[in-house]
Image (tube, rainbow, N blue to C red; front, top):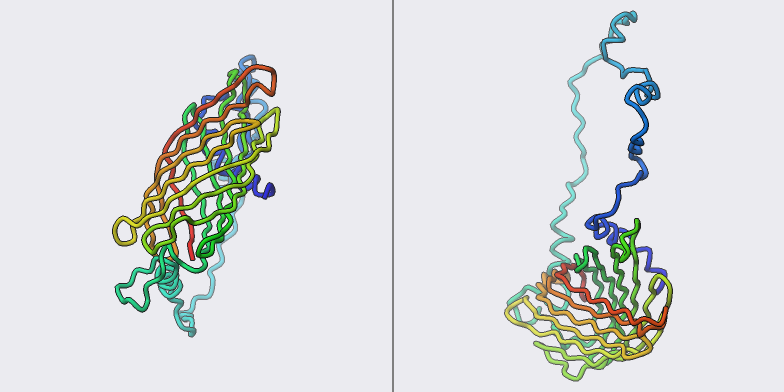
Length: 284
């Protein structure tokens, strides 16, 4: 599961661009000249060649342009046209939340005998950073597993150049206390980890989650996760989810508290993050 850490680099880059850091040279971008370099020195270091088609090419002899033989033939593909609506309709008409009024085609929604979910979500958090989640779940009528990877990219607390990254993981076994067509309530337990710049924690993790239908394909979702020791973590979120067949679009708000309990340098450091998020996923 830790191999997924690289997946979040692209999401964290978006959040790091929001932090007020000093601009530096990057791949594919010219470095800014130093203040001591004069304009004359910069001009002398620049390449003197000009692009093709400028006035410097007027003195060079020009060759007459060759005229390509023209023909009025048109090439038309003889194969059948690809209809993208076929696979799009297949996605929108599958999954546990099927957009059909026919009873024989309706899925079991939250009481499915076997359910698979995969999703990605993220958004800005307080202190000018950003966070992103990658989650995967497989669930039967009562029992299942839930795997989550969270990455936080934050500006440094001392104002220096760069960023601080925190990676959180959760591996839970789930038990559905309520497994109904219109609602599912789970109790969760497992292991959580926290990878900070100077320390790594591993501890027990407890959680609870709720999914319930509001109207048609619109659901409400809520989740709470707690790690009591050796570090302390509280992670809570609430969201609305729109099920378009197998595709799930969600948006909500999230809050998180991280406490290292003074294991790093004897000083208790507590960070609080909160902010909105958007996500997309698949559910079958």
